[in-house]
Length: 443
Image (cartoon, rainbow, N blue to C red):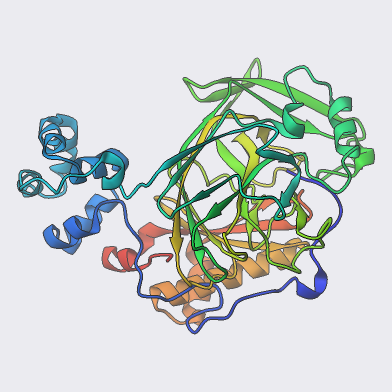
């Protein structure tokens, strides 16, 4: 969602980290964690069966991982779960033999899933700030790698002032009365133990549950926000009831929009000098950048993963801007803005990967970003980043990666209303042979 008219510092706009493999992606020996326990997978599955398991849409992967890793009683439940066994029969019949093996050492369900402590963070006046990433604040908590953060009852825009029935003039006045700041209710910062510049923080979106209402609005044209302020001088806000059982929003009596909840803004403290700060250590929540932030990337829904470069000690996580659904471009200014009953993420720290930009991943795609004040420059940056990703991860020449992007990769406009425009490239995983696909880990 959009904001003020201050942008990145032009002299430092192309700030990057260089690496021997590619200036965007690290090439360390550390592999991705996958979605089943690596020790079990490597010992028991050949490559063909392992790949089939990793990409089975029918299996609840978190539940499966718990079955594979917990006490013997969980293994007995696993054998009794006919729906799992029916699905797993498609992988290899000898999977059942593995499930009947000796129980693993005693472990809690959380430990079995590589999950640490669960921190519950409600939105309060102590945990939320309006429209800024403030690195001067003491962390509201410090998490370890593997810990889970449960953000409960998140606030709507303007410190929860946006509620059904509030008119557009009130929302516009709230914006004008807070110059330079975004409308987002930003929770944070949350520090991560041992995080330091050059690391990458992996964010796994485990649960995203919105409230039963959303709002889409455009400010009056005089505020200059949105893609077409000159065309729509009159502001408007539409409050929409959300049917969470059927995951639809009733836009009008005869128009319903499928819901796809995601968090519009989640990022780390940005690098020094990339943005013009509002004051030392304080930056607007509006423009996205190498720290991620207000990416407005709708693919970051439940089950997806975001990898963010760490720029400051402790990483410092901030989030806000909850969305029920958004169209690529977000042209009027907003998505279907809402609150979250719960946003649950897991944070995993990867040491010294030296990324320059965030990367996202879903079950079906790797997603590469390009950001710039100029949309053409954002497109070019996205293309170059995608080419570097493919060359480094698929081990092909950049010339071949250029050609592959042209025939198999979709480039989409993420948003055009946040000062810094966004483009994202969707690289489909299915075009790669199974063995290569397993090797193409992000970190």
